[in-house]
Image (cartoon, rainbow, N blue to C red; front, side):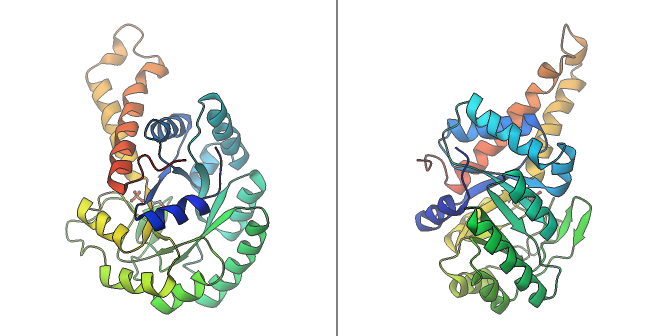
Length: 288
Ligand code: 13P
């Protein structure tokens, strides 16, 4: 069932669990994530970065593929297709293409411009029942070639953006995309707590879910995080399983070169990673 992320996140916030956003890259990714969500009776958000959207031949192709899968695979759990770190222009394109949720990442703009653009998008998206995620304080690390310096969001700015009618708010609290460096200082729970109080009952979003220790994830959820983004971890587990298959020379045995066989271990690895995260986030059994 394709839905906006609004209701599932409101429920997650009230129930003190988080819904996972898992980024997709192709058919195998989308299928593996949807099947796992259905098996675990969990709501799920499929994240699509601008780069991944381009790779998958545009946003209308993504919507067509995901809608087709929902129908053909009999997916009844709530599913949102969500633009990840979108520009204003791409958010509009996704709304047009049939996405059910968009993130406008205006964190690199001066706060006034971030506010003005977020406001405009909220108006357009709201009319169509599409949820909007806004961001304050750039998330560090590299994603799709965009390198951001890790920032800690300003609480007053979070309050201003949260008041614009957005459905979820991503705030930098020392989290970064990709693997965390050895000397990472950890999440700023003091700031998260302040942001949570200042923006309540707004569901908060934690980006850079890969590599954050389980106890920190649980604490973040207890402080109001209701959506957690995971991308790199699925890529790493897919790559490791595929490497194992090739290194065992299974592609050289019988019809092991058939892409449906060659990609199968990677798909199973994505499923295992998604399952592990859904269990950790507490979203298992929360679909209606
Ligand atoms: P990771 O790649 O670190 O899991 O981050 C994903 C993310 O935050 C997508 O927006």
